[in-house]
Image (cartoon, rainbow, N blue to C red; front, side):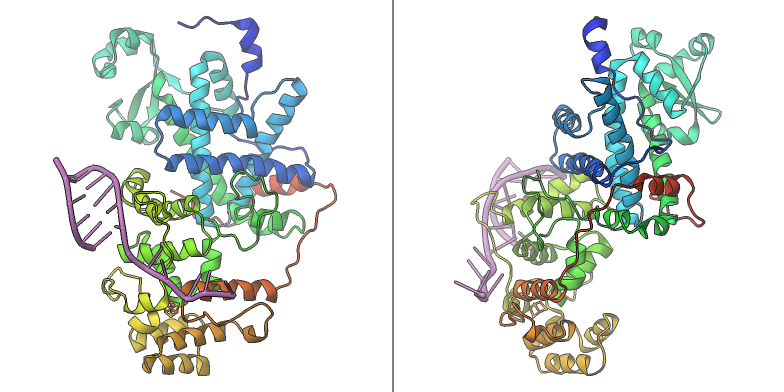
Length: 492
RNA sequence: GGCGGC
DNA sequence: GCCGCCAACATA
Ligand code: SF4
């Protein structure tokens, strides 16, 4: 039994009970706050994503998470004003990210997953703290449950108890919850069902509330997506919102400035369509389509990404994100994580491997690239004439450009075909400063490097429009509260 | 994917 | 069924 030390802890530890996020803030923020609030939350959410991959047990996970949350999104503060500020940060950051992550299904799914984990963490914490905070939270969130009477409880005792001890049973309250909201618990046979209602013990309410939060957020995200275009046209916060998921992605951001050209789990896609040779593009697209890759594909692409500068952590994240669309995170860790760590020299003999060269990809003893479900190999060498021609066409390459490439391919000059492909997709590369084409066609990473260089020097890069202090939150609020017509697909 | 261990 | 370990190599 815990003694309630009202004096010391109770006041200080009274934390926000307002994290269901029903209503957006109505105050305004400076651009600096806007950005820094969002950053705080991003750090937390990214941490959650990272922790989930580590296969920690419940306590380790909670401890680690608690540390970051206390640092980045503390829900209380030493002084009343500090507390106010922190609550503001929490509330605003949630809605900012809700907007920044609403525009594609991918982003919505990501945010939903991480926010739900954060929500669950806080809710469980709240529950441990007991009655008062919990009911404050429920009131804030506008949640109430239909509690059954003592009489009903006693009369259904045999059905309700399950494996509860008599003591626990006596101490528990039970709630009538609509069947649909309790499918999770029902599926796991943890609650009694009668006449379309599930009878849920107080201790299992967390699961119900989480489900509600999930659908609440999922719906809001879909709505926000419908009105994203309004907000994104804002010259100050528009760019901020659009880049948020690619920004601030660095580990502990000891180095303020993210190095341009640095790949991470969330910007691989960009590089894929702008700077990867056809072979890697093929694997990448296959991965995105199937949410899995055969062994040779994983190896070809994994090592290539490593060579392109993706760190091990990011690589794990990248593949995990994709694979877990069709399997559990647990399954992923069990079957694929080891091999990734091994390629980075973190397992066994601790050898760090380099990527396959073109000749190895073309001639090496790999499994048949034309097999169903395979995406590895070199398209110029391993694809049929017709399918390569079609592929190039689909990528917007036609006319003489395509004919030239096809000619080389039919001539079995695969690497030349590849170099030609680079040439036609990088107009003026030969004359662009700092781009050498020597390696292109010999090694996928050389192709990649040249391409990155090309795009970097081609586009001067315009940036920096640190703004005046203005009213970004109004836009956020308007978008979230009164979404435009049309609805985006909800994340399920 | 191969090899290897239980 | 569970698990560990390996392969690669352009390159300014
Ligand atoms: S030639 Fe090399 S880089 Fe180009 S597609 Fe084939 S394997 Fe990839």
